[in-house]
Amino acid sequence: MAATPVLSTVVSTAADATSDAAGPSGDEGEVATEASRSTDFNASTAEVATSDAVGTCGDEGEVATEASRSTDFDTSTTAVATPDAVLTSGDEGEVATEASKSTDFDPTSSSQESEMEAKSAAKRCVPDSGFYLERFGEAGEELPVSGAWLYNSAVRPVPMPSVSVKLLALPAFWLISVLFHRLQRSLMMEWNVPGEPGQEVTLERSLPGAWQVAINAACVVLLSGYAVSAYIFHQRILDKVLNPVFTPRTHTRHVAISILMYAVGIGSSFFLTENWVPAAAGLFMFFGYAICGRTVQSCSSGRGQIGLGPSCSLEDVGMSFYKHGPSLESGREEGKCVKATLLGGEAGVTEAGGELHFANVEPDPFTVADDAVLVEISPGGACTYRGPCGRANIFRLDCLIVLLIAFGLHLPQFLIGGGGYNQCAGVMELVVSLIYIPVGYTCFAVFGFRVGLACRWSMMVVLVLCLWPFINMVLGAKGCATLTYLVSQAYLPQIWDVHATAIQFNRGFATCSESAHALGGETLLAASTTIAAWVHIMSNFSFLFGFISGMSRMAFSKDEVQKVSIA
Image 1: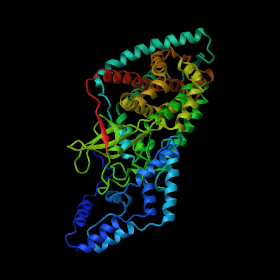
Image 2: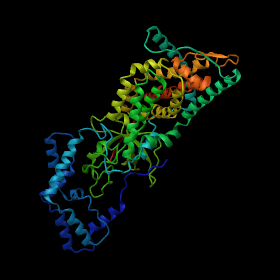
Image 3: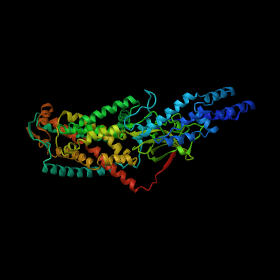
């Protein structure tokens, strides 16, 4: 998949600047005039150069040190202080005019700009978009989301297990899950855990036995096929639907989808004791957005945040990750390079044919994030920034707070429902499950097998926030056991009985079962139970087996970690 570089280098500018510097067509007087102008500094020029040295969080002594360093001028720093004076092909009179304009500063405005830059640096004590989704750049400006989409779709920190290995692991996962659920439910019953384990109701069969059994079989087969298909085609669902929805191109859409998913997460948490399956599906739909949606910005405050967007700090002028591209006049400084670790995956090529790579960057201190970028590595080994891949939304504080409110405050109710309590078969369970499965299966397959293994902070999301593997074992066990109990006639003893004229159903609240039967008969009970079971099967299989597989491959891998310096 090809990716267009975000930043480009203007080669013609270098040629023009070189020809102007040689000056073969000008007399010695004009050359002397140019030399005198390039070294004619005053106090206001020093203040402007000082404003370029944008610092990070520190005390006044560090700011003073930065200011003192910025006043050691030579002819090379003139080009850094005047990046807008780009030399193009023209006569020497135009070049002299541009040079005179670039050094004609007003002391008052220069002092104000210096103060504004100092205040801006002081505000960067926290990472960009650390507390909420910040706006950088012009309103309505499109965000550089292509790298974030590509990262979700193609990054592979470790080799993926083959399809045959997954098929062998799935039956083992199913068997362990059913046994785990039986143990959990028996303990909950023994301990008299509050909640409804299931009330039995007796209902009249509305259709002839043979027809009803055939319809029941069709419901189980077709809805199971729907769930399996969603898992098989999760890559297409990610590329065509979830990437554009969870990581939109504009800041306004970013905010809108955040508010919507926060409302879904918090709102769902209040219904865990009334209708557990739709409520749990809503919670995990929000969590899928948190781990697969990525935060990007049109630019970032400095080199430590370039995973979100190119740097707009004047301190980074000349580097490939500067917003306006590298400056040939200023060159690149080794001390400004950003350390990164290369990741596997097909990132595509540039328009010039250069090969792109994913890289996990080392963010600023105290920044907990999985920031990633696209880089191009030249044959000589130079590493050039080509665009941001963003940061998972889960590393924003607003998203984390919603997660703690939705999951943390309602964790007991969540676990009780995982034991088969507080179920409510019916239309709501059926519809919400149908909507959730393509979203949840895609997000957790992407994160469990690939994205969640990209760096230590991503792995901490799985191990700490998800309480891996306990939560995933509870949910996976609940899904596998529900479908097993339905097919084995534990929930609906007459599901395969062609001679029965009445049925017993014992899954969930009696009022829900009676309402569902009145609306859709035995068919709705069978369909609702089938799809409710699949809600938690493959998503938690991805988190459990995917993470075990990934960590095992990382532990026994002999490949060396490749470190690079992005200049």
